[in-house]
Amino acid sequence: MLGTADHQTELLDADQLCGHLVPEDSIHRKLAVLGDKLFSDRDFADLFDRARGRHSVPPSLVAKVMLLQSLEGTSDRESVDRMRRDIGWKVALGLSLQDEGFHPTVLTYFRERLRTSAEPRRIFERFKQVATEAGLLTTRGVRVLDSTPVLSAVQTQDTVSLIKGALRRVLMLLTKANPATKAAIESALSRDDYAYRGKPAIDWDDEPSRSMLVDELVRDALAALGALEGKELSGEVADAAELLATVAGQDVYQDDDGNFRIRKGVAKDRVISVVDPDARHGRKSKNRHFDGYQAHVAVDPETELVTEIEVAPGSTHEAELSRELLPELDQDHAEVTVVADTAYGSGANLKTLQEAGASTVIKTQRDKNTRGGFPKSAFQIDLDAKIATCPAGVTTATIASKKDGSVEFRFPAETCACCPLRQQCTTSTDAHIGRRVRVGPHEKLLAEARAQQKTDEFKVIYNGKRPTVERVIYRVVRNGGRKARYRGRAKVREQIWTKAAAENLVRMLRLGLVWRAEAGWATA
Image: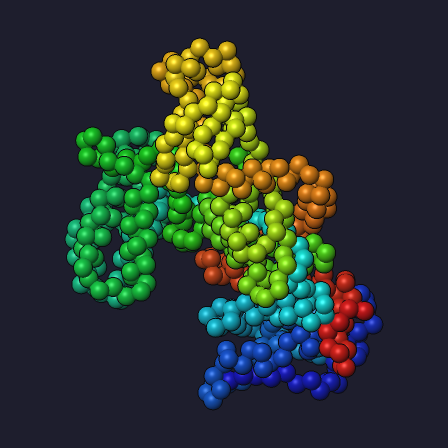
């Protein structure tokens, strides 16, 4: 049942006796003053049974503990310890000096209830609501987009560990769900060490032994999947079987002799751990790689508040979540200007944002020829007339359409072969092939964007607004925000939502957030 906070002051109230020790400008003092206005127990009533069970710890208290935990980067046990002995925490939470807090598992249970509820983002959304009421957030203005890595809480596994771990999980789940099927699978396996954790005991310095092990593991995985085919599986078993199928095929190939071998390179969207199947390899730049997730952020550069934040696997491209980060565009009379770097500057993304009603101040990749020749911009291209003219003045109407919606202009080989500008145009040594210029479906939009970013207006907005997102991201990832505390996207999202909510609170307090009985939330 829902437990409610008792606001009657106790005899040994920490604020009454030791409140003078807590600085007036600290987050603890501010939370003590405004905490009851930020959350009420009724805000979380749907998480509890109305008629059965013991009264819970007041959820408004737990929510405030989660905010302090996010700000200071403490574990569940450390947070409860601070509730017991830290004067600042006791004052912030409205506790008495003799209050012993609650068991750390209360935080675990509360997060689980919140995560599986109809409104898992309610803490983050509450602070957006407060910011809107205080006039710090509107549906008009600038939004700066960017992303940052959130490192996985688990170790990245190699192919052997992935396949063995996935098959071990299938067998473990079938122990209770379907013992007969488990027995059928085990009788078809060539190895009998799946009940044990860790890698198989082989001579890892011997290449034939390693190759034989990979082949055995893949064949055992296929045998298990074959035994499961056509059977009705429970949710957990079905998910485990799907994971087994994924890891058994993502890193291997079958050679000419029919043996399974590990292929070179990294598979696209590769699962990196059977313990956290949602985590992926990610890359922020050519030389900067990471494993885990990415937090995608939208920021109001005027107030430096996080207006939207989402977590996706590390392999997700930044631009894929652009539209999700801009819910303001779904509201009437929204006027949003989106500022972002070249990761968001694809033609498809520009089209999506502009069709949704946003103005864009987004850098695009500069037009260049990777082989050093004339770039595409050196050619006069008329898509309506379907002709292109090269720097030497030769015009072609020979055009080929591609499956991706692009078109390719092809210049006559005999003309290119004797052209005095050939060395500046193409590095091809085949005299039977002339210069080819591919034009994408969004080429006109990209050309307009490249012209726009050369203007003084673009530079003023971009250089003035873009750096704010870096400062906000630093706040979100400090004190434990860079590394995931939990496994699975759902739990990592919850961690980052709470962290963003806590940092928004700190920022709003610095902007003068106050509560006035007659007017509600405002800024001093």
